[in-house]
Amino acid sequence: MTHPRPPISLCGLLALLVALLPAVAFPAETRTPNVIVIMADDLGYGDVSCYGATALETPNIDRLAREGLRFTSGYCSASTCTPTRYSFLTGTYAFRQEGTGIAPPNSPAIIKQGTETIASLLKRAGYSTAVIGKWHLGLGGPDGPDWNGQLKPGPLEIGFDRCYLLPTTNDRVPQVYVENHRVKNLDPADPLWVGMKKPSPDHPTGLTHRDTLKMDWSHGHNSTIHNGISRIGFYTGGHAARFRDEDLADEWVRQSNEWIEAHKDEPFFLFFSSHDIHVPRMPHERFQGATTLGYRGDAIIQLDWCVGELLDTLDRLDLADDTLVVFCSDNGPVLDDGYKDGAVEMLGDHTPAGPFSGGKYTVREGGTRTPFITRWTGTIEPGVSDEIVCTIDLAASLAAMTGVDLPEDACLDSFNVLAALLGKEGAKGREHLVQQDNGKRGNFGFRVGDWKLQRTAVPKKRRGPRDPESSLALYNLAEDIDESENVAEENPEVTQRLATMLDAIIETGRSRPADR
Image 1 (cartoon, one colour):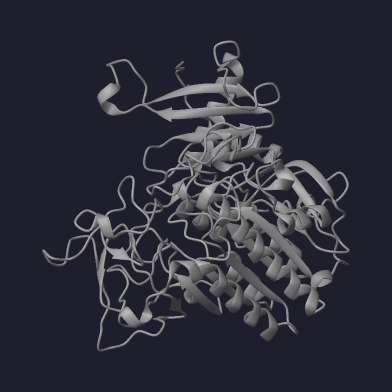
Image 2: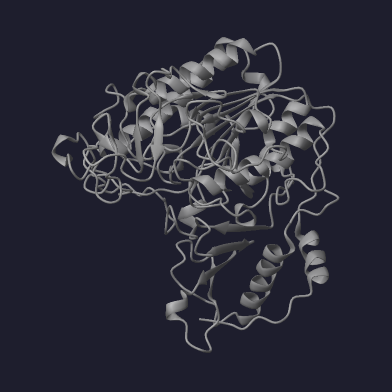
């Protein structure tokens, strides 16, 4: 169903958007806590037991939900990792910035030096800041990372005091740790080279040496082999710096616990950026076979163990009452994402996206509505909230919590929904949210209350002389949670109103009013 769109009065529409925005304040007398954001990777709404999963149990994530606030309308802003992480850190929708699609192995830093981020805001509030885990937002200047030299700019140039990273994502090369500005344990006599072209005719790949793989590929992941798994892209050298896939989760936990211990006497912000349950799913041997769902389910159990280790550290250091923990995911679920790991064959009755349709790469609810939990022991009253909140709002919300001024030209789409995140009585979350896919196709979801608009780009080769560039579909989430019945034709005024609002948000360059 397509509809023509009338000219947009930007001033009038901005006034309408301002009227829709929640205006919440945080009580000045409340102390400011430490903050830990635990971001899972590719974890679906229905992948954990506190959100309805029955094929496995996630006791530590369930503990967070039991002791905190579990959101039924908690979102990330995009259905792939790089744009979600960009918007989480910057408070700005990723579609506003070119180059925020899934970052290739040699991507330069996507968040430019000097950009205000959630880390720089909290650093100005006196917090020590660290990111540990998956990065996938590029490193280095315009020419990309200098793997054998200083990897800057990077996280330390946008507000983090420390970083310990998987530099890209683990189905892309290289398989090394980056500690602050350098590859850890890199031997200068064995330099690291990373590229997208085969470095030599005899370089082993998933195509030429497929029979040697311990996990076979299904599509696209058939270049350099490391640890018996072939990846996207090519690299050579750096052998002393290479890690084993099975050890990633243990390393993130060890580094995080050491950093928390070192900063227990001062306010801190930790972004714990898990790689679980992204492909290649290769959990530690002690978790392999822990579920009936194959390595995908086993990786969920490993993720849950990580959560438990962090919570145990907070308890041991007597920090639970002084720490706000946020649990979320960077996008919804996917089964076969390039490897033959049993995710499809062993799925059984498990529903990774819960009651929603779609998943990773889509603008349906399953792509961006994920587990979202907040816990601050003694401050957040345990319960369930239906308010709409998004990872993009953490920047403005935490700035409000710590009393840091939000610059007018920063965090352009981040709203202060702190009261909703803390479960304050009568607090409201977002009234509207833009959802995007990877950004290259121009597909958007737009939720306003119970209405959900999908704007789908029509490929040029399929357009006729009178066809618009996109088609519109409308769903009533209160009655049709899996977005199966397009009601645009029955509700043309609603369809047009939401389409016009979405256009205004995209074209005006911001959705947060400058004075908030």
